[in-house]
Length: 426
Image 1 (cartoon, rainbow, N blue to C red):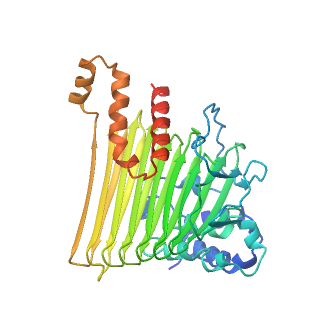
Image 2: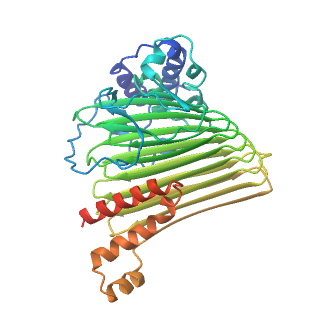
């Protein structure tokens, strides 16, 4: 069916403003991605999965400017021994990055992959993104596959001694960055990937993750703290038998953030946990959209999302668990909750279950509410100032999401940073 004229015009205007990178072995995937974008059209508010979030500034030809945030805080995860890979406005910074050599893992730039015709990533680049369009179109992910000029390919073959840290730096008020990362975790291998930083004025990031039988990947991400940045991110993950994937995202500040997770559980006894915590104030719109497909026996998935909103901030959660026929003994859990600190903020939720197997334990729930006045009174009656008491209750509310981080040092870093941010926002 032909696209509406308005959507087609907007799509062609966006494509005309972009330049196709040197292709190499990724050329077929990029050309196919452009064809998908033209077929689907870029999103607008009439699309079902964008009805709560205006995509206008994400799809317009020119990126809206974002003022640089004067941040005197130390970098997130700075106290943790890690291999640092730095991107400035979407471009790899070799001088600021560590040597990419690390036992148990091979790390290469996307640019280097594009200059060769044969590479392991050829069989993965754009593949999971393509699969992720069924049943929901994700044209901004296809746009990324077509035009991302930088990123890394991470091939995990063992158990690296420290996390791989992707650091995104924003230095240009008009930067419009695309990054595409590819991760392959081999059987029995295990790694941790960290991400932090605002990245650009407008940021489009895609990560494709393939976890083989018995592989494990931990992912911890911190987004912020530029006030005016806009970002859309996609993570496409495929899990094999007895594999494990655990992902946590912390978001603070930003005019618009849309994080999508698309997970396919294809091997028996696999585990997928996705969690997020966000703190929004004022002109802040944060959207978590998650789609988990169970297509194997005796698998577990968890979705835990908590949002703290005030001064007119908006939070969105769209989460779906699809259990296919034959995916017996599925354990699927989904919870989305918001803490509204005033009457002007809002939380929009769309939880979904679609189940075609009969031996499952699946549940979902979504709640919104104000701070617990009884608990607040209890703390104040014991001499705790109202601002400190509010922060304590806020941290307690976010705790279930933060507890999804297995590494205690990483979890402590997240909590410490939350405490610092909350105290500054009084």
